[in-house]
Image (cartoon, rainbow, N blue to C red):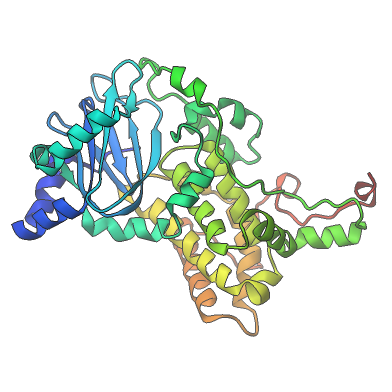
Length: 408
């Protein structure tokens, strides 16, 4: 995670862009995140905005009501090395104040007692901390909405871990069980697991107590059924429409919005919270939907129109939010041609783009996603293009279920 601006510079710039009456109204009606005793040089983010903590920084004001993601990385005294990211989702109401305090021993933000939080909340509402609060950059609000519009408090509570904190420091046992399948995943795992500052002590007492991971939906990679012949199983694995319908009915209460919410939740936890477990879940969900043939054109057209829009904005933000010509969130090296996304999109795009009849919104967002991937990565989705993918190591190559596999 890298700093895009200091709290002091972004504060003065945003304040100059509006008159005093408008600013005061936004201060009173917007939410406030009061952060006490956060050390200087700590990197702190909320949604798509990242700050470097200065000596006077006490939090963020004018936060629009709704769901947000807060994440931070503590710094060495020199400010040039950082610990693994810790993040958490919050839901703010109009004028609500949320208070956290830095625990020097644990090197993390902790909650206060109800009495203390109430006392500090009243002080915020009396504007006693106003000069020390950086404003939420409202001109970037749309960026966050585009990648979080299906999130809600219910969806966050459904999937977040016990203790609510998201950090790779809790995931060693979980991620060790999932061996990386491609060079991209190996690089990703190494990058996220590598401690950026071995000299910074990271206490794990609290993390050990709240070790439980996310409550993600279990997405089978292959369809298996004891009573089916090999040909039928092969068909179900080539087209995951039936699996999608089963999951929607059994795990998502029949609501497409919960599925889309989980895609956004896992992407944000992966991209901003640097969670490997969330990356694997995001990958599983993307792979499931891009492996459907009947659903996009016939049974779930509206879902796929929304899905194309969701993944378009995720990748657009992740790779086009840049500083010094480098992505702030995603490393483009992760998305070489051995990545699952290339293989799945190469099969999915012709399904939609060459269909004799297709929904207008689905066609629009499919075209936009294809263009984004072509211009960002230089990918060629022409079916006659040379494909350098190693079929033997490709987990998304066509699945043929042998006869023996149907016998249990």
